[in-house]
Amino acid sequence: MPIIIGALREAAPRETRVSLVPEVAEKFIRAGARILLERGAGERANFPDSAYRGVEWSDAAGVLAQADVLLTVQPLAAAQIGSLKAGAVLVGFLQPHARREEILALQRAGATSFAMELVPRISRAQSMDALSSQAAVAGYKAVLIAADHLQKFLPMLTTAAGTIRPAQVLVIGAGVAGLQAIATARRLGAMVEAYDVRSATREQVKSLGAKFLDTGVSAEGTGGYARELTEAERRSQQEALDARIAAADALISTAAVPGRPAPKIILRGALERMRPGSVIVDLAAEQGGNCELTRPGETVVHRGVQVIGPVNLPAQLAYNASEMYARNLFNFLTPAIRQGALEVDWNDEVFAQSCLTHAGEIRHEPTRKAITG
View 1 (cartoon, helix red, strand yellow):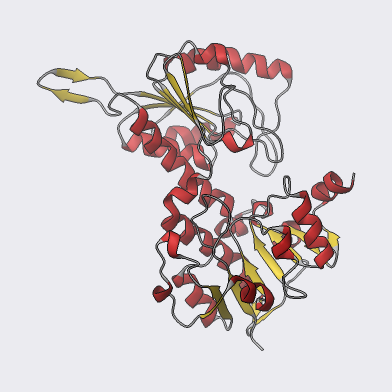
View 2 (tube, helix red, strand yellow):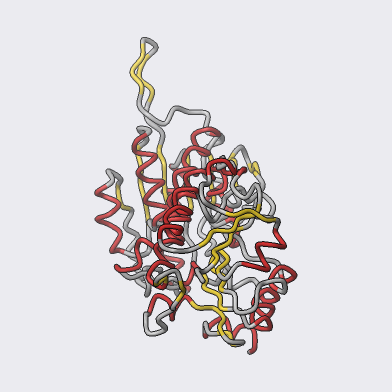
């Protein structure tokens, strides 16, 4: 019997993405799978039911009860996990650092779960890297938000009334989101400066036409992430950054450490040196924010500076974000689909490292330690 791959209409607040788009559903069908969707699953991402061909339809309970593999964007609630088919496989963003009850529910259910945020950052897995695809969406959108709130033009304009100088944009963090923010700000004509504690990003920043801010501090980490800075390194970095923060018209902040609160980089004192009318878009808001004044999901105005703490930015570009995410899921799963059946190769480091739970065990060691002590 071919495996049944299911997807739900996301229930989390503000979540408009869908884990399976029509193009990818057809690819799974050609690979020998059956597709079972909850009615209206893609409507909020502008994928109506009529756009899906060859799929089967049910309500949420039916999908949970029948799917051999369930694809999701946000983590399932504990009650939904209890309704999964015996032996089901769950694939999606599972937030292992923050979802204790849900992970315990997966363990009790004996479900096999793969967390897309745990996919190793190796060359072979680039097409599966959902964190990067969604971060690219967030970086792009962050600049549009900054431009919308800034009371200045981003590009230089030469007019009959004189020349308008380009806006100064500072991007902190040159990961995928930061690089996309740099590229977008440059396309819009801004003067862009960027900083990252990983000195290896210097050439990437320069290749996009931005100036790299060198503070003399390097924090190369593993897996493509930065390590946490020491106190002395943090002070040295802060002194150099504060001067550039004060000069910025718009600041896009993206610095994060996986599984930990976001580092506080934009301190109140530095913010108070910014010109009134300046804008900060803090992409680390959901992890506590890089700015001391950030509040997730809110805009704080302090001495004329707007501090915007967006939540789940990829959901604001749900159509393309869903397309990218669904392709990541397809690329992740297809190596394990053989003649319509799912056969996971546990010697494959992609599956081994991204596995969160399996056979009643929490397989991801840091998560297991955090939950069980």
